Image 1 (tube, helix red, strand yellow):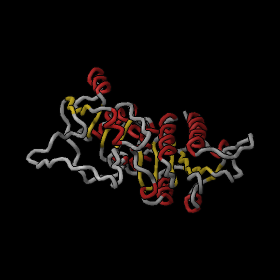
Image 2 (cartoon, helix red, strand yellow):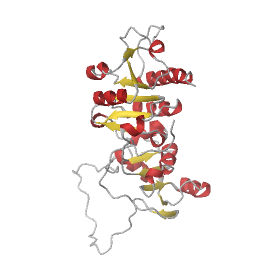
Image 3 (cartoon, one colour):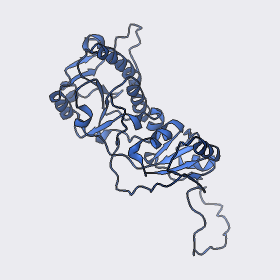
Image 4 (cartoon, one colour):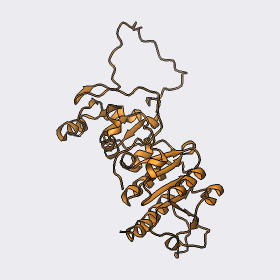
Length: 299
C-alpha cells in the first residue's frame, strides 16, 4: 500500500503561516506588550462579578498535540510551510538536538500555556501544532488501482473510535479511509491524538454520499463487505482476496439501510463467549486482521 502522506482534511480559507529556519522564539502566544496602546490603572475587583476562566477559548479542530501526532504532522510534506509549532523548553531542546523540526520556527512556552490552549485533560507531552485542515484525497485517487483493503466509516462521530480505526488501518496495511464529509470529525484534536500519527500517513477521502461512493468503488473493481452483528454469515466466510471495502457503522445504529443495500455482503464477527458487544474500533481491528490474511493469499 502507499505510505505517501496525503492531504487528508477539508480545505480552509486561512492563509498558512510561513516556514523558516529552526529558531526558538520565546513567548506564550507570540505576543509581547502592545505598541502604542493606552494602559489604564488597575481598577478594584468587582466582588459580585463571576470568576473569569484562565482557559482560553479552545478550537481543538485546528490543534494537534502529543509527541507522535505532532512529529508525524511535521514529517507530512503536505504541511510544509504550514502551522505554528509550540513546545516546552525541554521539548524544544529535543527538537533542535534531534533535528526533528527542520525549517520550523519553534515557539518556546511553559507547560501551563499549552494546557490553557487545549481541552481539559489533554496530554500534550510538551508539543502543540496549530494547523489548517488538509485537503482530502479524491475517491478515485484512493481506489485506483483496485487492490487491498479500504475502510469506509458510516457516520462514526466519536474521535477516539475514529482515531483508533485509523491506527489499526495503518497497522494492517489498508489503502485508506473513506468518510462522509458532513458526518465525520476533523482529523485533528483528540482524533489525531488517538491515531498516534496515523492520520498523517494514511490517505482519507471525504465524499458527499456513501452509497454513491460504493457504486463508484464497485465500478472500479471493489467488493463491499459490511459489518452487521445480525447477519447469518461470518466475516471469515464473507471475505476473500478480492479488493475489499470494509464498511463500519456507528455503534448506536450500525450501517444505515441504504449503505447496507450497496454492500455485496453483510457479515458478523462471531462471539462464542456470549457477550455480543464490541467497541467499533475493536471490531474494525478484528475485521482488518481477517481481511489482511485473506489478501495475503493473493501473493
